[in-house]
Length: 382
Image (cartoon, rainbow, N blue to C red):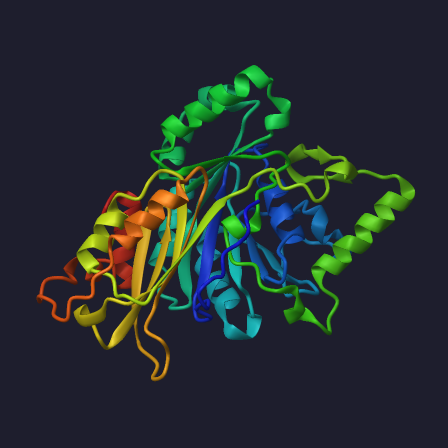
């Protein structure tokens, strides 16, 4: 995995909401378990869109989980909810007192992810921001899944990130064929291979330093204790969705990402930046940070949040005394960071004056919550 660039200061007022989808047996629960195990210092609020018992073995150390909300040592929350309850739970998890950093909604294996995405986009909670649709597919059963569920092609076209899971169960000659087919169906989304659902959490959300949790027994501490107990008695750890993983796989992250940190003390020209954003390449999954547009808006800096095709700008007044910088982090899979850096350099503009129409492209992505739902139906999503 490449070294992680220094991030701009995160916006504590907004919590990304990831929708985790995929048909039964694809490995969604295994991936969610992995995120919970490897969350670093981040507090994850997990909402499971299904009724009944939830077999998340990572939570066994903290107590049985049924159809209720359970609070773990690191503030991790899991709920079993119906779609009609989703907004209620988003509001609960987004409260500052919950101290949640990211919310993951695990969709039912037979759910329509588009509806969950629409509900997140339609949320009027100012602390909630769409964090992307992650579609998990079973590489070994992909052909059979398409025959049984042809709607998977539509789900892949909507996804912001596709995790091609269980590659260890696929013959080597078939792996690239499956990956290429998924890429052809995913409409430019980042496509990442995985085994046991192991993708780096930093690809999906910012991991907080674990030192923030000094003074309490963290979930990571509990998991390490469980691992130690398992090694002592020679047991193997069972994974959700029917996957099993031997202890010698612990600590292996099978998916790396490429990241670019861009900083400029010269303002960016809004039209050039929008041309860059409108033509961003396949595999570029996330863009986050702050933009200084100089003379085009001297009062505000613009926080930018892009995931997949989704794009938002949030103007906020400059704080007196703060250096006026553009600070961006770009994260993707298979991206050319050198070329992207040159394209961003070409967006610099130190002109002392601006015309009145220069910000129109940017302001198009400063929208009211009720306008966001159009994007999932093919509206103005970038």
